[in-house]
Length: 145
Image 1: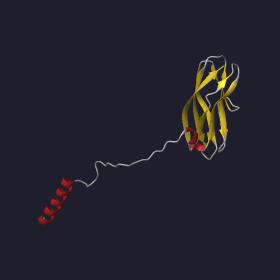
Image 2: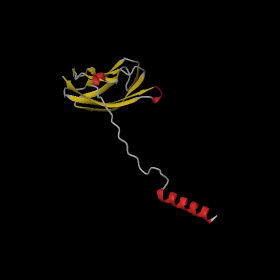
Image 3: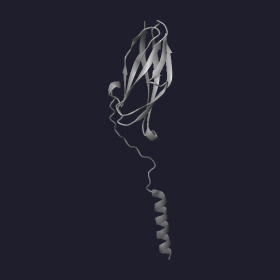
């Protein structure tokens, strides 16, 4: 009987000393390759026109093309202008449009004088059920004549 207790005590002592054989820390390394596309080749392609617009007229400053392969909602969330430049519209809407696959829309500006300036817009695209979203800032210089 004493012999069994001694063996059991040694076994318990050995278990306590060696621990539970669990991990206290894990370190892993992974490599990732990232490819950056030009604005015209991206899923949300943006083409800048750097327009020359007559005083009192409206013209296209940016063309945005949906290259996701599915319908998206595109909106303009922030607008900043300088000089005589004023934000015009996003297509036929003031701030939001729905684009099908490969559809494009123009961001227009208006010149209210002859002072050159610029347009800075935050574009936000979101897919159905929010399965995709893109937010990007675009800037374009505008010459007002």
